[in-house]
Length: 158
Image 1 (tube, rainbow, N blue to C red):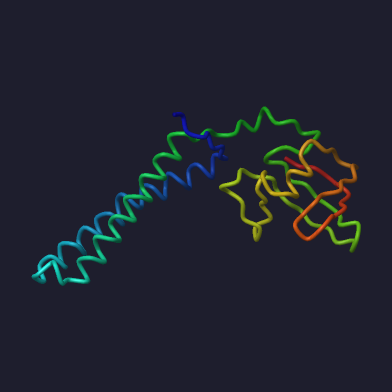
Image 2 (image 1 turned 90 degrees about the vertical axis):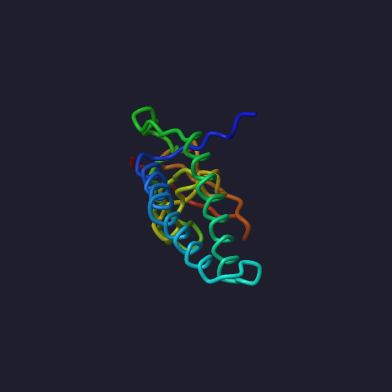
């Protein structure tokens, strides 16, 4: 069974690789050390410290396994193939809310790189889905959980 391919920016993929490297080279040895120290304290059947360290080791190994799986199916988005004239992934889009006149700028990013505080919204979010394929100057009506929002697309940037 083939796994789902996940798309990343170069920066997002590097961030994942760095996290995996830290888990393997820093966190894994630290947990092994905790297990060794707990083992030295005697009876393992009643040693909560040992149980906690073994549990933490299991969680760490699961996280490492998931990251390795994600990286094995990761693809970098080729920014040179992206159409600059319409909203696509990696487009920075400036919107004006027609109801209150507020302007906001979002960058459409792969799902795993979304960060609303940084203005990065997932390509799978309701707003991004409503914007995909639209052009500068378009007015869009987007269904969000709170109702319907109307936006004017003021400008697009790559």
